[in-house]
Amino acid sequence: MTSFRPTRTDIALLVLLALLWGSSFTWIKVAVETIPPASLTAGRIALAALILLAVVRLRAIRLPSSPAIWLHLLVQSVINLALPFLLISWGEQHVSSGLASILTTTAPLFAFSIAAATGHAARGAAQALGLLCGFAGVVLIIGADALKELGGPQLSAQLALVGAGFCYGSSSNYGRVFRSISPIAVGAGTLLWATVLTVPLSLAVDRPWTLQPSAQSLGALVLLGTLSTALAFSIYFRLLGTLGTVGTSTVGYLRVGFGVILGILFLGEHLTLTTASGLALIVLGVAGINGQLGRAAGLFRRPTPAARS
Image 1 (cartoon, rainbow, N blue to C red):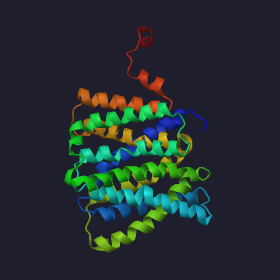
Image 2 (image 1 turned 90 degrees about the vertical axis):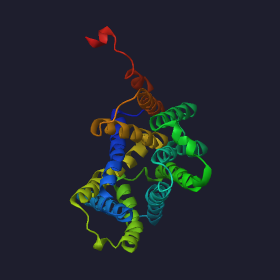
Image 3 (image 1 turned 180 degrees about the horizontal axis):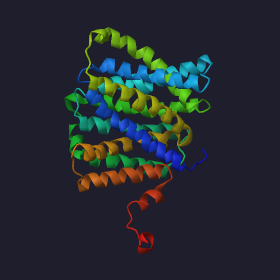
């Protein structure tokens, strides 16, 4: 596979995607206070699908006409949305949030393994080293003590969370089939299928017409649908065509980093040496995977007198 060199726009979009998905945990926490998980998932997905379909119409973007492509979009909606959401929702009922974060962050490792097995890993050993570096950073930030929970009576829940990581790693590889299609059209098609899959479940389980969501929960749902889903998926499918499968999957590492940064900025949490080391490993790991190691290393070097002037 031919190597590539990401542009600054690619890296900026990767960081923005991590911020959008990293902040979604905050909005979910607010939304689920009065909106049950099934209805929240269906609501954010349906809203995002409507937004992207409107964008498709306004920009005169052509949706795929091939039944085969629509079948691919159905598969993508299952492995990138419906199935991992289900696995994570069930797994987190039995596993601590720390261990759940570590287990689902195996997605980039799965993405690389699948890409390597199918001949699509661009930098081989260099990418593998960067992936391990980023994963080590995640473990440092969350705390290695979380790994002590591995095994035992909750093994099935742990495997479900690893399964979610496998789904995300698989979906980033599967996304290669859409490289000739507009990212907005791919996002709209994927979310349209996901709406078909999730809305009936919401209707059957929650009877949403009986709910009384608060204004805060509705506001959080709107943010989830517009920013963390519609905009995020458009960026995600664009990056699959520029950064590639493995590079895009590293958004999982950056998302953990943004979770820490947002906690420091808005929740009064403190930056410890261990956390700072974890953040550094994530930055260096993601930069190494995407061919930006020299630039990232410069962030951690003290400027010379000439550089200060």
